[in-house]
Length: 341
Image (cartoon, rainbow, N blue to C red; front, side):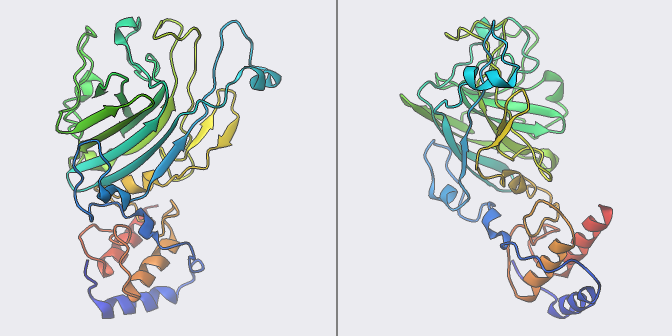
C-alpha cells in the first residue's frame, strides 16, 4: 500500500486531536489479523502450505455434554455425575482469502471420526446439524439467517448442505448443492475446491469457497465440535441420545467466541482464540475496527491517524475503504462508519 496526502493527513490529525476524544488506544497494532493472500495462494491438496502458517492458527477443544435417556440430569447436583467432559477431540484451523475465494485448512485429532449416515435418518434434515450424528468438527458458513454446515465424514466424503430455495438467491456458495425433496441426492463440492485425507485417528480437510461481491459481505466462518443425534435417529452404534456443545458469542461477534455451553446454561472458557470473525469482517467489507478490539469507535480513529502519521501500514484494518491505499480517504470512511453507529 502507499501513503498519500501527508499534509492533508497531518492537518486532519491536528484538527481531530484538538477535539475531546477517548484516550489513546494502547492495544497491540492489529498486524496479527493480516490474513489476506499476501503469502501466495494455497494449493488445495490436503497439505499445510507455508502460506497458511504465516496466518494465525486457531485451536479448538470442546468438551460436549451428554444427555442420557431415563435419567433426570436437570438438577445441578447430577451434572457432574452424568456428564462426560473430555472427548479427546482437538482441532486447529488456518484461514486465508483473496478477492475470489476463502481458503480453509482444518486438522482434526479424533480417534473415532464421525459418520453422517443419511440412510438411517428418519426426519427431514431441515436443520442438518440436529438430524445427523457427527463426532468431530464441522464448519459452517452463514449468509444472513441461513447456515450451511460442511461435514467431513469418516469415509472421506465432504459436502455442503443448503436449503433448495436459497440456491438461486445466494450465489456466494454456488458450488454447493442443496437437499432435494426426496432426500436421495447429496452432491459434494467441486473436487477442485476440496480434499479430505483420513487416517486411523485423525482427518484433514482443505477447501476453498467462492466469494461473490454479495457473498463476501455476508459470509462468516464458524466451527463447532459436534456430537449430536435425536431419538428418532439410530445412527452408528450410539446407544443413547446426545445433545451438542454450542459455539458461544461475545459482543462484536456473530460467531467466533469459543466456549462450550451445556443446555443448563453453565458456561466455561475454552481458552481458544476468538479472532476468526474479525478476519471475515474484512472479506469484501470493512467494519472500521482498526485496532482489532471488535468495536468501532474513537479509539479506532486515534489508531488510524497514528498509523498514517507514523507510516505504519496494518493491512487490512487500516485500509477502511478497501481501495488498496492508506490515506485521508480512510479517515473519512471511518468517520462515516462511526457516525452511522
